[in-house]
Length: 501
Image 1: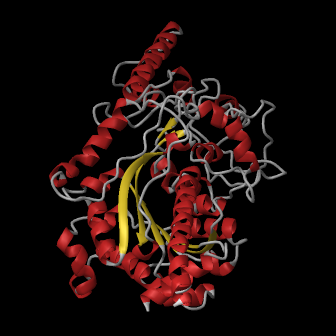
Image 2 (image 1 turned 180 degrees about the vertical axis):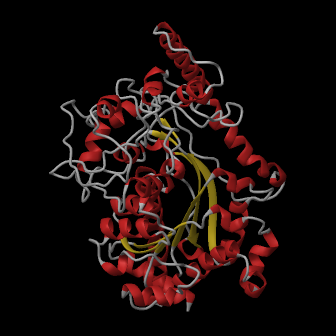
């Protein structure tokens, strides 16, 4: 049956039909948006988080109820999914499967166990992480995609001593795929963010395609920390040096390419939010930030990148203004943010805060106030200025962005604090807004996030940057197209010879 299914899918794509995509662990849809933009049909998704599932349904299926419901992959079979989304026959439903189980799915699941999950699933029924991996493989088996794309953190290459990407390739190759993986940084692909991730691509062997990865479109010298993280991630490859392995060196960026998109290019046309002014006027306070107050763009000319974010096809900027340009209420820290220098992290922030506290003490004593060290008043004043975190334990907790560089990696914990991305503009003196986080992740301005501020930040931090996904999708599409054309050129003489004979 497998060969017939593959041949039917190839025949369909030969008619220039759009490849149909299933996005597993889709989140709000970063990969989906990249594939949609590259000319794929987003036909279905699986996402457990209710807010992210609603966002995906809203942006790709007009908010259709069936596509906006959270789905637990451990309780939903491929047949269940096809019934829920009215997709017809399971084997013919999708051409491409994208996404990847959360990295926790692989913890303590060794190479032999990866294979045993399918052969002896009962042995792992109590391990939810193994269940996620098992379900992923079950979906690949059921839908028989022509291509698979997986994404994960670089540490997946050295996860407790395991190279999960390598082991995944072994499993997929046993299922009839050719497979390869690499590490790509999104700043090389037009995203204003230095985000390093593992990407794995697999093609059905019948295609005759070779795995490769898209060439960079932008140039940047990465800070030392990123090279260090890459070295740690690739450590496991040293043990495979004398063996065949599926790691592929990423295509190199060269200085003749356009420079990487900077934070300022990404954000400068968005309206200023002067946090200290809002606080003084009583216009910002505690409580959930809802997306119901539209604001207009600034009058500053948008950069080429900002213009792309405003005009992205099918996700153009809303005519009535941006509603998710909202920030956190952090009254203790606005003055401190203004004092910090670009690149400052928590130790520098703490030093600035301590200096500010000493200044306030001096002013108080000038006016005759006696603030004894250790008194209630002394402690209250200090708490109102100096953050309480231990400098030795939180060296990287805070960071003020540089305006002339791409941002550092956005993470899911944006949904909890946002101190990792303090705005470079000292006058605004705040952490970034939801819309600014979306811009740094390359979500267009017309992309809508379900829920309030915190769920939106989490969705953005968890996503694959759409521009990164678009580069991969475009490359995969071209690879499949070339493979089909090459296959046709080989098969045509054979068909002709058979006809003559």
